[in-house]
Length: 162
Image 1 (cartoon, rainbow, N blue to C red):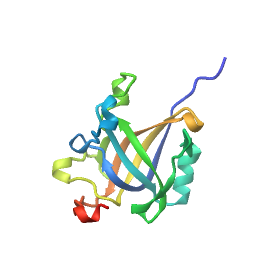
Image 2 (cartoon, rainbow, N blue to C red):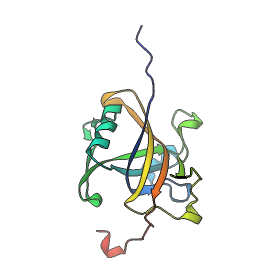
Image 3 (cartoon, rainbow, N blue to C red):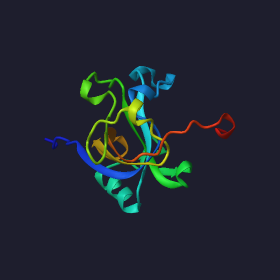
């Protein structure tokens, strides 16, 4: 009988880009219609050692023919990955969906999107992720985000978006 797979957990430090991890700014594009939206961010580990720790935990370097770790233009082409969490998990298990816990990293006080502000590119944070399975079929879920150094969100001018 095969050994039962265990979920692996890890906490990593780095920078957040394009953070949509609150109920107030959920990614509700039609692509995520079946999960009623998705909470996601691009995470760029603080250095190569931190990136290697994520890979060692089991983060897939490739999935369905796509590179999962790639250069992020907004982060001066440092290597990073998209971390996500469905609003409603397809399995129906409530704990697997919904917004991740977002806190002030030093006090564990809940982050308030309205009071504390949206997260701008380059916000320093610790992220907790879970990885179930292995290789290209591993399932990765964003569990928790601790904000270490807030960069206020700035709306880009329309002419700068392209």
